[in-house]
Image 1 (cartoon, one colour):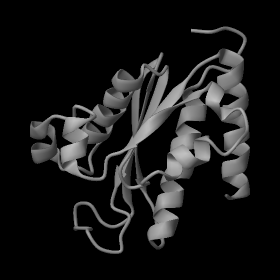
Image 2 (cartoon, one colour; image 1 turned 180 degrees about the horizontal axis):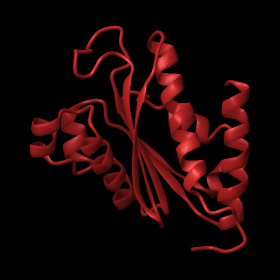
Image 3 (tube, helix red, strand yellow; image 1 turned 60 degrees about the vertical axis):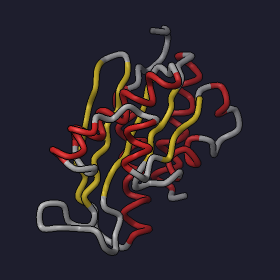
Length: 166
């Protein structure tokens, strides 16, 4: 784990505990790395409810409720699918916050429209749904680690700073 991720993770840990809020994850391109990061610190069971590694479209549809039409119209690597994945895992777990990742980690699978390194992240919580597109460089490991870093940073950006529960 990089120092940058460790700093963000410590901030998330403190805020989630201080605000008594929970989080869940729906992962495609990160394949469990995001959930692993969120459970890195002792006490994470206070806020991490769980996750789904939805690599196959059938799992995105069957477990997370991603619409078949959305997958066909926009593709698995899209803002629309990331949004539906985040909403789906939040609905499934009842968490206050949910994060989803979907992308092209490489080395194959990219296209001119969605090259290797294209990642969509969605975060849903008390203040709405937010999505962000990342265009990451490097090999498969770098893309996946960058997606985790971006996801954690995005959640931290939207979490309340503490003092009251929502």
